[in-house]
Structures are given as C-alpha cells and as structure tokens.
Amino acid sequence: MSLFPLSLAFAFANKDMAQHSNHTSKTYPNRNNENHTVQLGPRPFFLVEAMNDSGLKTALQQCTNQPFYKTDFSIGHRGAALQFPEHSKESYEAAAKLGAGMIECDVTFTKDHELVCRHSQCDLHATTNILATALVDKCSVPPDFSNEKPFAKVKCCTSDITLAEFKTLSAKMDASNPNAHTLQEYMNVTPNWRTDLYSANATVLSHAESIALFKRLGVKMTPELKAPSVKMPFNGFTQQAFAQKMIDEYKAADVSPKNVYIQSFNMDNVLYWIANEPEFGKQAVFLEAMNSKADLPDAIARLLTLPSKNIKIVAPPLWGLVTLNESSEIVPSEYAETAKTLGLDIFTWTLERSGMLQHGGGWYYQTITEAINNDGDVMQLLDVLAKKVGVLGVFSDWPATVTYYANCMQLK
Image (tube, rainbow, N blue to C red; front, side, top):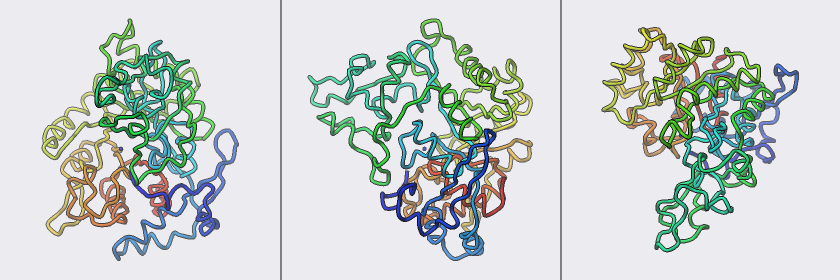
C-alpha cells in the first residue's frame, strides 16, 4: 500500500535538505534517552505548494518554519516503503526519521515456526533476492527454465526456509515481472515513482529484531498477524499458537501493552487476543477488508456487531471513510459516521501508495476520484480524516507527509 520520482527521494544525505535545514530537524529524547532527528525532507513542502488555493493551504504554509516532532498520528506502513525496501531495517529507521510515532511489522512465520516481518508469507520472490541465491531451490515453486516464461508461477515463502536461512537474504523493492525471460528482467522492475537508491543490501528482520529496533527508536508498534498461505496447522503450528507467539515476543521484550496496537483482518485472531491476552486485546485493531464500494453495506453491518464483541478499534482503507457531497467536497462516509456513532476508534490505510494523483488517485481514492486532480489533494484528504472523521492515525508509505500535517495542526 507509491509515489515519487528520484528527484524527490529521501533527503538524509541530499543537498535538497539544506534549504529546509533550519526547520525540518528537531532532536528529541526517546525513552532510552537517545537523541533522534525528525527530517521531513522536501516532499511535504512540495505537496503543500501543489495544493489548490484554499484556507487549508494557507494554514499549512504557515508551518514551514516550525520545528517538527514525531507523532503517533503518523504511522510507518511497512516502514517508509515508498523509497525503501518494505519491512527492512533501513525502511523502519527511515520511518522513524520521518517522524512516525508508530511503525508496522507484518508478521508471518518460517519453516521452523519463527516469526519474521514480511507483508505476505509467500512474497519472497518479489521482495527479496532469494531467486538470486542458492535458496531458490527451496522455493515452493522455483523458476521453470524449460518454460518460455520461467517466472510465471514462481512462489517463494518464508515457510519454505528456516529463520537462519531467511536472515541470509536481502530485501529489495517490491516488484516483479512474471512475463520475464531472465532473472534480471524479473527482478529489476521497480516502478518509476519509486527508487532502488536505498536498496543495496537492505536488512530483513525477525519479528523479535523489529521489536528491539522499535524500542531503540522510541516508537510504538503495530504488528499485523498475516493470514498464513500454508494450510494450518503447519507442521503442528496452529493458528492460535501463531497468534499467541506474536504476543509472547512483546512480553519477552518487556514491551508495555499500551505501546502495541495488534492488528488482523481475521476477526478470530482479534477475539482470541481479547479473550486470552486482554491487556493487549484492549488495543486490538480489526482490519476491514473492503475491495470496492460494493462492499460498504456489509462492512457497515459488521460495524454494528463489534461493540458486543469488545472490539474497540477498526481500520478500513482510506476510501471507506470518505465520500463526496453534492458540492463535490470530501466528507465523512456513512461507514465513518456509523463507526463514530458506535464509539469506535479508527485507523486508516494507506497514504502515499497511489502514484501521482492527477488522474484521480486509483484504488485508495475510489470514493472521491472526481475531487482528486493533483498531488496536493492528499493534504485535503488528511484534513477531513483528522478533523471530520477523527481518526487516531494514518498509515503511510512516506510518513513525512502525515508528520507535517499532524505537527502543523498540533495533533499528538
């Protein structure tokens, strides 16, 4: 859950950072008394200037010279996946530097039942260099070089290899070409609104390693228990054991439940945590799996059942929370109004994952397409989500955008 060309890439070492050096950096102490720096880089400023003239644009322009701090409203979706390989150490560190107060590790498991950070159990062929290593022979479906399109059905899963083997891999930008004839054609297809500039030897992490890193970075944690791609139980590893092991790793690391927002699309996982780990279950997030506007009536009906199940937080996609009124203004949707009436808290996903917005924004903007015609409209959407919907936080592939807005509007 893609956006900008290399000219607007991350500004850790970029000379573009110099023009904002007086107002995009601020040191702050984390709970380990280390200092970290929030560095927004040029992108949020670019987006504000791209906005159509409005009172909101004027208000956001007034914030360009203020210091910026990390904020829980800004959530690193798979880290800072717009420019860094998702779920890599480097992506997580970038998210923290961009002001994310909370970072996500999607949690799946290996052949030896160890937990690792990957968006999908079977995405290693697209998100790591496994096809270029000796581990390719262990893939569920390795390339078939007797076929004209040897990569058409390739599938490599974390459950194909052990944790030790997983740790030998390097993360790469999520991209693949199933019609490729060669390995280079298959792997080297990063979209032009992303970059490979930060992909050299990106470090994959176990779930436990992500926890240790997030503690060091001083951020809250929002792990998502991913749906297994293999049949469960997997070699004796049950779904409940999987759900429990994720919680156990936070306990082992002495992480307070109040600093963890556990997530799942599977309501059974959420109910398991509420019943068996109530301290963590208090902040369990039910992720709403809507694919199109046609799914909204069923999703609204599901909302009505959540309070009786003690589910207190929901997280639908961005478009599920907004619609257009008769004046083509972005306003809260029926789903959003229902959730608010029920007293549910809300997160939403995912900003900065849609390419350039001049053509309506695609999937994540499907209920407001007619109102989206330039990249600055992302700020207008954020404003509605924050002030009219009242979301707790927004997942973003480039947290700096949300960090800028949240700081300007003095959100926590």
